[in-house]
Image 1: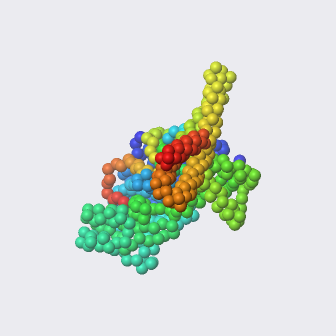
Image 2 (image 1 turned 135 degrees about the vertical axis):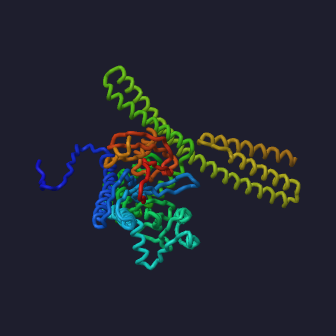
Length: 447
Length: 79
């Protein structure tokens, strides 16, 4: 194997044996993003320092965290659902030591801060082919769009309340100004691609030390930059081909068996997601799945969890059985594997039966309850009408009382929790007995 | 580990399912977004050049947490 080289260049040589660890590839990519940010910032500091006659060095390491965020929906403080969101860089620490003329040092500090902020945006453009957002870039867009940029000090701190920006950003700006620092901030939040928020610059007027901050409308405040929302979505979605198999797999752990059977005739063909038939088909499938999900209940969910843990155990036993082979220990694990597999299978079918039967039982019970109530009302109406035609008000009153008692009994019996068809049958028999009992009492009262 | 030893190295923080049951549940889905976040516990693993050097406590997916990086004394200019 030969690769062309050129004298004087710098190379990295990488080997991939086909079993790349996730951290080596994906973690390495993130780490490379962060290191590139520092490399490019440092290179630009050096060029600037040479042109200004200032010397700079780091007496302690700078720290940046490059990562992905989820957009999270909360019920109160409980996270309920997540959506892939955006990549961001948070520069936790970037402290430079400077040597040179006092005014030049101050100017260098401010310009170097601007360089860093600029790379917090450019990193996303280089690595993700997506628009990045950073303080410098926000100022530029504000200036171009005619949005005023205010310089806020303790002398005009009341201006903070007039800013149309997220509450978390306002709080951070108020804190900075209260500490005697100066803040530069646009008058309102800006929309940049899929990102909405504001950026601000905090300056220590004495030393020229500065912080370039951004805060989005979700309340995140970071000392760095952010990528657009879609950059991460593209990463996730490209990993999920739109195949029927994939769609079915999504519902395999929940309630997708019926759906799976229906869709299996399409095999594993990748379907054309742009076709109107696909939209209609997926709409119908979604409706079916959402209906099917209603059939879950606390008992079936508990059984399903049992099934999942048994399946997990079976997997581990199988692995160990293979490792120990045909030895007493291996045979013991093989027996355990079989036992767990059987238990998993049993728990799965039990979960399924609980789901379908409960749902049927519930509707059968409701239907029978309504039918019985209708019949009782009709029967009472006929009897009362006949009593009144005969001029027998006493019997009419007894029949009305009997009707009310029957409806009451039906309501009480329908309220009993029946978790299977035999239990519903028992409720029906009990209703019949109560009905006959009340009829008997009515006849006795009339006579 | 001294902070200086991490300079230029691959220091990564990943979150993994907290136990076998959750891993099984997560692997059965095509995407994490198909599951309710409050049911899933994840624990952080800190890796230095892909070798695990620390494992943290489990907590619910998408909860806010903070990473405290080494912070030696500041000197002259800070941003």
